[in-house]
Length: 174
Ligand SMILES: [Zn+2]
Image (cartoon, rainbow, N blue to C red):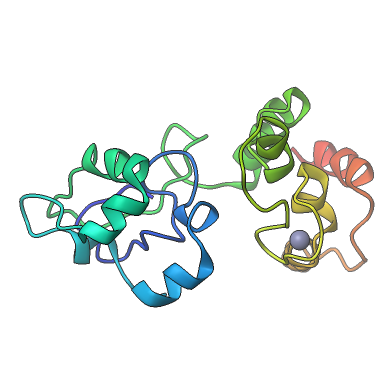
């Protein structure tokens, strides 16, 4: 997210400060106490952050990250960072995956835990399987549904294929 006034940005579920969503670092119980609908703007008084002391004590590193952020009067905006213009396209997504995926640079949970980060390994979408790159983009039930919708949108009426075969199909149309 490109944070503006923070009214549409969740401090827990959106990528708005740092490279991880806070929901991956904070317990679900604590998020329930804050409320799932909390917005970043509720922690900002127009000039500075007004974060409760209890949060500061529990998450001093997160608070440092938050304090590096400033809100503005602009409207929050979803941006696709891999594209220079910030707009998501299938083509830019495909290029992003082709460049990032083979080098192991996508920060999936399996990669982060292998680097020593103490987070749950479960998929952030379905929670049923370990979050690997292959699972996240091809085997997760959510990913399969996205693939099905994309194929329907493209007027291709068939079931999604294995990831490597879909990649070959995608190359044909790019
Ligand atoms: Zn999944």
